[in-house]
Image 1 (cartoon, rainbow, N blue to C red):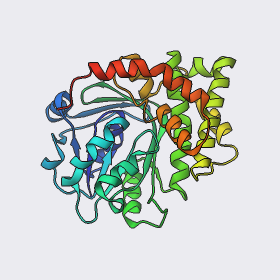
Image 2: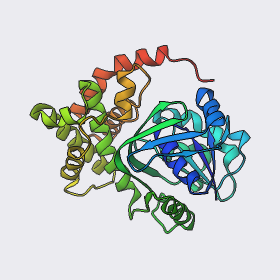
Image 3: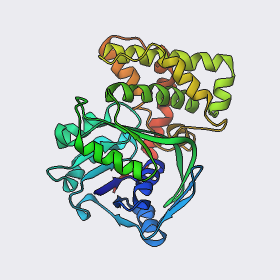
Length: 313
């Protein structure tokens, strides 16, 4: 199996690194300092599940340098997916499957619009990981797991092979009965925690401990459940309670990648998370006052960060 990992941050670095460590042929697509670090010193991952390194690393500066792969794992920021999608064509062969590991619920459809629905399978992952330095990843929380499925949830030999490859690499990989429900359950967690964490500038421990912010967290989750249902995905009745219990189990200092980006003044996934809740809610006729407030309150800083960000090259 040949796997191309596009984006070598916390997600791509960890999951791609585990595959490479197990002997899978993995090519990392990166640029700038990250590409130079991968080519020079390899990939280093500090993990609560065991530190490891991959040396040497196969790394390329663009999809055109890689050629067709069996699997493409897309692990860039969610706001980059739509522009990135057409550039992935050199990675595609007749049997290639492109699996986005993004926060949000729109990445798979964005990729399918550019590459064809038959070459994309929705995916999600759960991990608390971040970049320490180019080519150096820190996995700080959550037992890493990954899930993917075909759009119609049919049995899929290509995804079974990918699941088995992750299992051999020591990663909990699953093909859920309903990938749509799995996507929205992850979204329920990440959008509510990311938005309120970014707005309050405190980690999960402080956010969940104060009754006032805990109530806002619950209300934000309830809005997401309502939007999902109006769009045809009915989440389990205990979805909010289970998600809140998961938040309660996070390390005290846990933060989301969107929160870290907002606090550092970088462009963030605001549009793909709380912005998407608001937008999708409007389309479905579902009010989302908490998510709307979070989105509106963070939007000025997001616009400023995007104006200050260097142009992609």
